[in-house]
Amino acid sequence: MPLEGLLQVLKDGKDKKDNVLANQLASYNDKIVIPTKDSFKDFGKINPDDITDEFLGFFSLLTTYCIVANDNDEIYGPKRSLNIMPRTDFLAMYKKFIEEKLRAEISECGNSLYTIVSTVSGVSNNKLKDYEFKWKPDDLRNKVDQDWDGKDDMIKKGRLRVDKFLDDLQMNDKVAKKQLDLLKLMDLSTRHGQIGGLNDRMESVVDHPSSPAPIFEFRDLKAITGDDVAKRMGEYEDKAIEMHKRATSDIVAAFAARVGQEPKCKPKKTECPTGQVPNAATGKCMDVGPIPPYNTGTSCFHLEETQIPCLGNDKNLLAYVKMVDDKKLPIGETQVSNGEAGVYIDVGNSYSFKSKLLNPLVITGEHRNDYVQFTIGGLSWQSTTPNGGASCTVGGWDPREGPSCGHFGTKPAKNNMNCCFPCDGKT
Image (tube, one colour):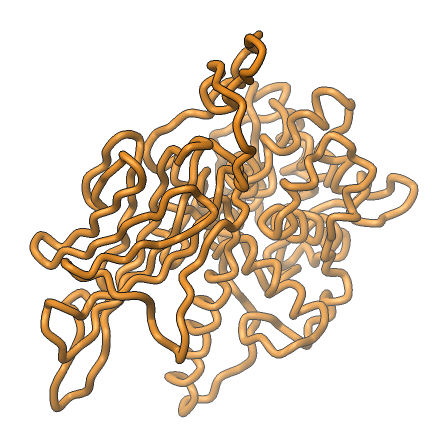
């Protein structure tokens, strides 16, 4: 589940709101920590733009685990302290979603993951460092091959200090010489060790198959009687999909990761002659002109393609588009009325999508070979064939067999895709 959706489940649990994935009756709900941007105001090197719901979801889960650790029953271990148990380990989540966003704060300001979590937790007088995750020592019998600083004493006592856990997430353990998730390793020492047991495995965000999301187990949910099993399972699935759709991850960054792009170094300062300025994307000089009403570099858009049933192939494809600029700010969206699914894009009836870019994006849906053709300015590419730095990731038709039309019901088919392309002030 994306961390944005997890944040909502934690909020609903704390506020005792109706959510089938939350345990509204749990005693620990009052201890759930829901941070906000203001929670990080003391950390000047954390970019406020990085404090997204994804960022807040991770710190809500991590901080809450550290808070409830002090009250967990050693008989059950930490996994019963909260009804949400991460199956993807904390280290994988930290490195994937958080580490880079804290790099400047840690390296330049001398702060640590522990000091950040301690501040967010609201625990006074630096007492969070004394909180401990607890296991019954007799249960820590499974051999864990990984060594770490203080391992034998921790297993003997069945105790893991919160500050040690957070320090080893952030930096190399003295013995292991690498970052470790000690909560996972300690829990794996038990017969029923499960916390972080899937290591760095993740699932995909719904409708964004190349965007990773951690895997969680939801425990101690409302009891189900035999007659309600099917209904409740449907409610679980619907709520999980709803939480997936709360994802607000950076489409550009996710797409760049998919196609193997590497972050580019900022171009060196270029001295330009009078009447010219450096191009932010290339570093080369260009003539001074009107400032474009968008951030140049890379633009991306999400397109939902709809195939209408019971119509001929000459007019049954529609598209709905949302476009963002290089800083992920919205610069255009399809305008429809009366609940229409989009604008027709069939051959001979292409859709000229207008945005803040200087040129329209011309969209044409092709039935033969099942692709969408895109043209903007002098750049053209297909949804299935990249060109000139422009590419798409296509999710595929749902249902796979296409729209249905007949006695058994009429239903359209949907095909979602994410596309990115280079754009400068002349696009």
